[in-house]
Image (tube, rainbow, N blue to C red; front, side, top):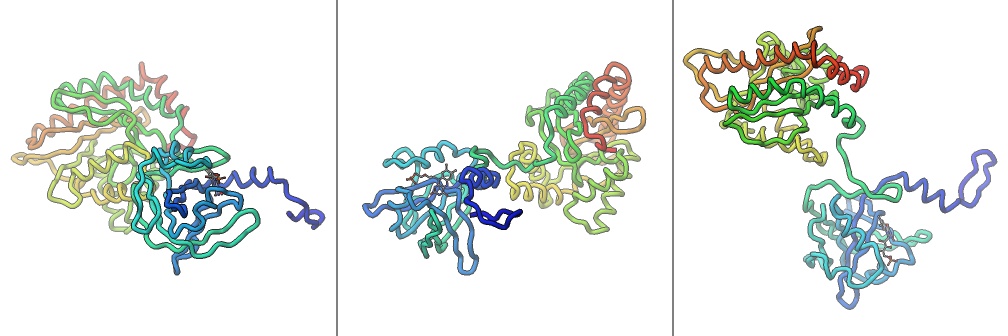
Length: 417
Ligand SMILES: Cc1cc2nc3c(=O)[nH]c(=O)nc-3n(C[C@H](O)[C@H](O)[C@H](O)COP(=O)(O)O)c2cc1C
């Protein structure tokens, strides 16, 4: 029964409307498993799994009172709640039908608590029945948690409006196809110069373009004789300190503030250090990172974290972990003078490509650099990149002007202003 707001009377609720409205609320997908009285593994797909109480630790799931499968495992001494991952849709479909022998082709093992554990599930919650409450046409099966663990920190399978989907951390600010296509077209204007840099320095040379207001994307790459093909195109680089200085350094104050707001520490001293660093990068006209292995995290850890971020599809927990490694890597980006007699292990050199108004259109990056470069070589390589950037800048005003206009047009109105 539902209350009619205008009359205050109760009316019978339309079941279709109940399903339609409830379908707008997404759920995760679990397989609840147990044992039948004759020792067979039993399982059913359950979307109504929920946390109930921390102290004591209780969870619940709601089978229909007519469920034959629940009837078979009602007397099970233990249940295992298997949280399904985004890539377990076939398993979900198999477990959602009322038929015997569902476990024949499914990898599972008995848990020490007495219920079948499904391989590759995101998490396992081992519990035993605590109370069964009849609630209309469903039971609320309250269970006491005995043990629980994350088995595979993958993104979960979700059920929404009668269909399946996955979780995406990029949410509302996800880059649309139109933006990405225009970003790639713009980067292509720089292709001849990027190929030249890669050939001349023997390194990896890449064009970085902003594809939304918080990430750069690698849109064109070329490889010299000493470089390996490592990153696929379209890899994402988060615009958060200490990354993206050669881009943000030339942006207006609101963009700089948004960049600083993404720093993991909001300590005024730390933010001030990043601001000074941006000023130094702008004054020098380039940004460099230095490889160091004697720090925690090491430069190799930073590269791993960036590779993981670039690949996307991170769970929020992994994204937080990856971002924290990036945030702790500011030592690689500290300013230093290039002094004769010294040698340098550089991670990357990045220079901005400026358009007529002084705004940064894109960045050129040289990476996979040999270790132990002497000071004259570092200066020469920075100059090579800056010459290439100046040539791309000229192209943006001539044969690349349409691509640049189309790129700006595809971006949201207040983008990077
Ligand atoms: C995404 C999804 C969520 C489901 N959630 C529930 C649930 O919360 N409770 C329930 O009784 N059945 C649920 N089912 C249906 C059962 O999995 C299915 O009916 C059962 O495994 C086999 O049928 P039986 O219960 O009639 O034996 C769900 C099915 C799917 C596909």
